[in-house]
Length: 558
View 1 (cartoon, rainbow, N blue to C red):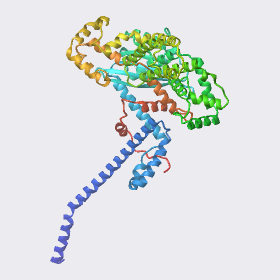
View 2: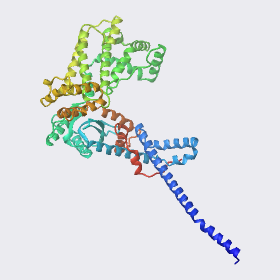
View 3: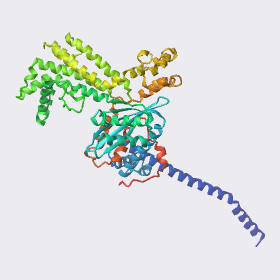
View 4: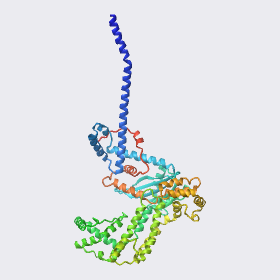
């Protein structure tokens, strides 16, 4: 080989050796690209799983069937193909088949329940509200809510469980279910301070009722007797039943049924109201179990009494009562008093309401009854607008008859709210400890109550947060070190359920989910749906749930 050729060959070998470093760089870059690819794929998979959980939660809260997920995915893919076709593949990875949606909702429910059990460990005291209903398949469903207060006076109320009762629903059976739920949740009996029921015999029986069994259990555990309350909204509705007025209700219901029972007559009546340029377009039905419906129905009928009379006469059906002044005055009085009862009922509803505030509304209504009784005897109709409208039109009025009705209603309120009246002093101390007469307080609270009332700084702070339930805890936290007995009493009062409103609200959601179109919904899936759709203070930890899952491509047809 010539020298020139050798040099050329050497240069070539040297150049080949010198390319080693760039090859390592290329290899490193290729490896980084592969890592970025896998990271991107993992990120997209996690996003798809998270989206699956979020959509499933929305389906549960909307009360939609599990199969709705497949329809939602089709909508998403159609929208993606128009808006961002290059990302359609990412959206197709979101798994929303019926089985997946059901599984996701169960995961969300389990996560919320785990959070509840963890929070329950911090409860200083807690109470239970429970009620029972029957679903579309005649299965008894027992709903339990828990309301707990921790050392920081933070209040939390959440759904504890919904239990299907396939057999008997005796007090003993309900008690066993309650014991199992309390044990599984990790709630100690020594912190159990209150139970609120719907007042059914199986709940409130003196010897074998649920409340009696709970009190016996607490006695065995060496715990102070729990405060047992009958739902304040149920009692208010029962009080209103003493307003019989069958002479009014029978005529009103008969007229409405005649108008609405036949399609042709109903259409003619609505056309008649439109022709008369009436304020309302129809009359309303009355349903006994819907407590507000009677007041709404009566008020609408009273406003349309002239139109109803004219239509019935035009149709050849005489209704003599609509021309009777005494009957019309009875109708007007019933309209006015049921309207006031409806106003009270709405005040008693709501989530997170303190038992003392609910009882204050009942006491206020009882005081109004005393005022109305005196005014009616003097023919003062300033608080009875319907009666006043008839009197202004020339209808005679006699107040003695209605005074007796008010008196009967007043006696009914005094009798039915006896259980709340027993704890009236406690509620008043809780509502305003600085104005309560120390001599009327329990001996264990008297010394602390005197010290509290003489503390100007705490008194000023209490005035700032008075009436603000969300800020009341800030004030109460300052009492704990120096006022242990008062703090204990405040916690016990704060955690009481005044009503089973949350249970009734849950039953509406239950009936919407387990309808005649979803009768095969299992008990497990029903409970998961209800827990996810009714959770208020607890939110599912979707990020944590995603870590346990990997992307699952939906089997639904695209």
